[in-house]
Image (cartoon, rainbow, N blue to C red; front, side, top):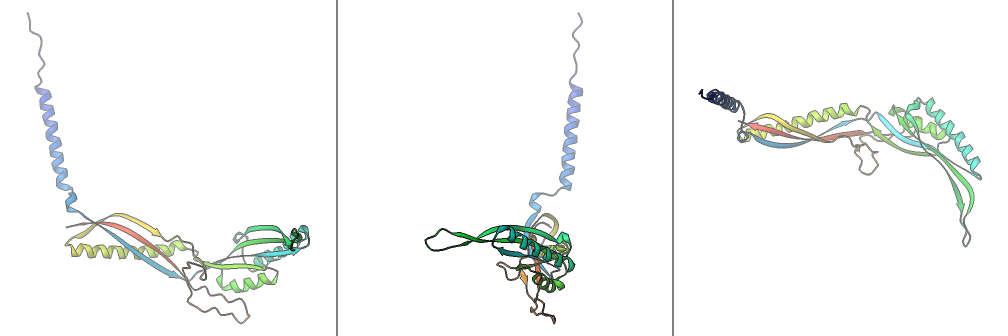
Length: 254
């Protein structure tokens, strides 16, 4: 009677052995080209930078408040004066895209007498617009023109820089140079070298610019407010300061 056919396990054993050897060889090769964590020193560096520029844009709000005995008359008077204000801005070269209505209101004007309920004696109508002035040199002349045609509310200005990204890019470059110089200092003292940047984090640089007289102002006045020969409203734009901070982590090696 023939014996059952036996399948030899030797080929499978040889294949498994070859696979293990290849994996071991690959592991050794990768280890030879990689860097151990023990060979790397991480240093975190923080650096700040500021750039000053003369502002080229001004923002302000202006409008008209009118009073009359009845609501309809108050609105009519206010609208007439506000049309004149808008026309004056157009005549001064301010484009319609730079004028935006920020508020329209109508409120009663109460008369108060002791021991009597308040009585409405008239109405206040108000219309206010936000205006962007892109030629700061004309700001004083524009304000005079607005008041001349009936504007009796003016707030501002707040100064800003049109192309803030370009200024902030300059600040970024300076901050990165500072950070790298500090990392090189650490590396030199430790007998190491800067191998690479591990991470970069940026803070600041987007805070709105406020007027110089506002709380928490970041605008520096560097010129006196002097009216010109025509007696226009004196305007001193000064300088705006834009700044930011970068936190950089460097890898130091021998």
